[in-house]
Length: 301
Image 1 (spheres, rainbow, N blue to C red):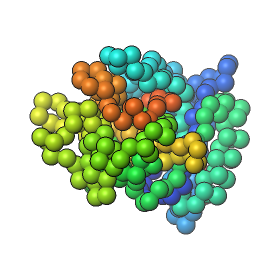
Image 2: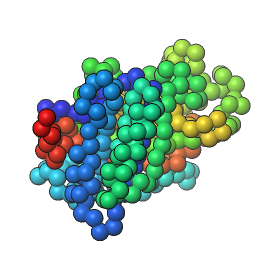
Image 3: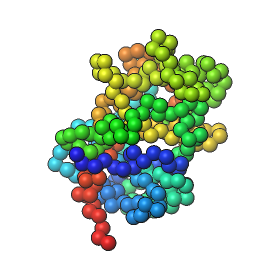
């Protein structure tokens, strides 16, 4: 199988920069794809930089980059629940994510990237992420508890075969946490999440609230649970902060089903959505390393 982008699986970085771009009017889609495919992190492991790039499904198809493209759709309409609750659609054309041990590295690469892409794209949105208590989000709960191991992750995050093999589907959302969360006692927070707070132990099935975050984010096909690979990070400052949801899968439908369940389609609305507001929503196709090399071959030394 073609090789997935290494940055998808690069756990442990403390600093993150996320950049979403929109194609400039009158510019050919292929020009943006080629410009991004030519981006390179420092050509040494000493720099400790990881890079993930993705493209809006419509832009990728319009660019005609490969003979076969996976049947993906953009986040082109809000996800609406039965009570009218809505998650916004803010699809852009391209996504770039730098991560490193320190923010100065991310900052310098971000400056260079925005400048390099300026002739073909405008910066739609920039977000900065950082590590909080190693693996917790700003609700205070451990994040990614249900993640597959790093050995299993490629089989979850990457398209296994056919069109787009080795690529991945990324769901990227910004969720702002509301101040009302901090007013909840710990036992109430645990019922919202569906896990204990200090040690992140999932509630037993008979004690799991049906509207808990755990219950509403699990996707099943028959008796099989369909997992995704999460790389969530916190963002923001003391007065305005939250979680950047970064979910990878080889199957877009399970990502979209998860959002529908959270919004209250086919069951209760996720209790966490009463304490956290979705501000953005986009899907990106993250091509395999092999596809990117075909678009922009490695420069000769």
